[in-house]
Picture 1 (tube, rainbow, N blue to C red):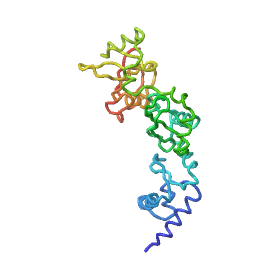
Picture 2 (picture 1 turned 180 degrees about the horizontal axis):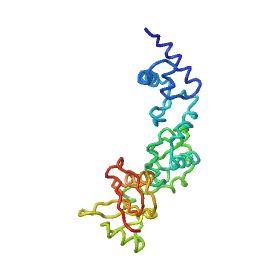
Picture 3 (picture 1 turned 90 degrees about the vertical axis):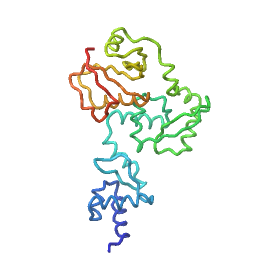
Picture 4 (picture 1 turned 30 degrees about the horizontal axis):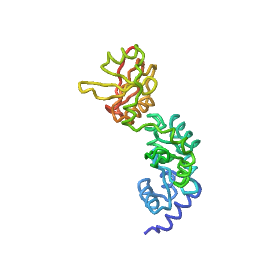
Length: 264
């Protein structure tokens, strides 16, 4: 019968050298990857080892508390440019009111929980409860102090919640050419949200939908992710109207992001 203490010592010895994936741990204890993951996850549950939520390849990154930043450096290799930009933004500001971000950034933040955390706090200026994201190394006391210190500056960053956003969207009409483009594709009463992004009525029941107009040669997966972000923020589906010559496979987004080809 194998000595669990010996296995434990081998795992801790490997991680003491730095973060590792399950295959590396499996090699150090001479087990297959499934057995190794079961064993190391047991020690994770006991709080002796930590692991990332995001995976590097097919494995989380396992690490000791002293190597948290090293583990994040490994994960940075899995991020796209937009995700890296958002993380840099949070690290610079330390604490950001979630409503001050764009729809796409709010969507991206949901998949960056190793780097940023979320907390709800009451705004001292308005008395309303707001959601904030913050750099993962900060304690909740640090976050509270930063929010209180920002005071009115933080309050000024607040944007209305979903219903208020819907009510207060700019009533300015989009350019005539865009109005015609939206109209001939069945979208009515367009209201500006961001540049070339509109909230429109659609279908017999005038369902509120997001329509994004993209004049690009290629629609890639990042464009789908951005579109999904708008849909997530406004709790509806998103349409992309484009004249792109090449469009990436968007099957993974189901019916939440729809492509319409038209002349722009």
